[in-house]
Length: 169
Image (cartoon, rainbow, N blue to C red):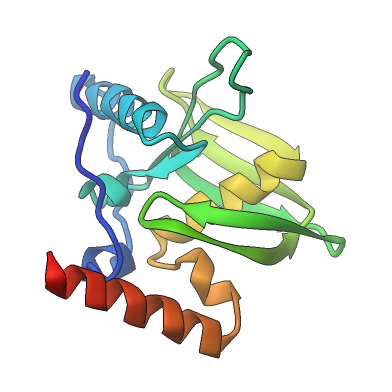
């Protein structure tokens, strides 16, 4: 497994819409392993392939606690089928926008269809943190960042800050 470098704002690759995964093969499994290793190293609870420079509709999630056994999940070609009218607010952060957090309101429950590493189609209803994390990561696959869900003023300040940091690097 390889820890991959993270794509950081303002890199325009983060705004790219990712392509579907065509087949579950050794390369996809290797990318999933690398993404999980990268996510754990960061550390984070979710990672979209685009965040490591791979514009594929693929994401990894692990919501296990620090003292719990790891529970890695891989979602290929995930799509949200239904969203609840009920809303929930979580403080979100992003490995591609380090050390910035903001409260984001999203549907409290979603139903997601995805392809698993087993090559089979799965459907799952998610609520709580899993629902938020899935929506956050699926947004990445569509070129949307969590800062797109906050006020324009706050978003512009964050982009300006990260653009300034990138110029210095």
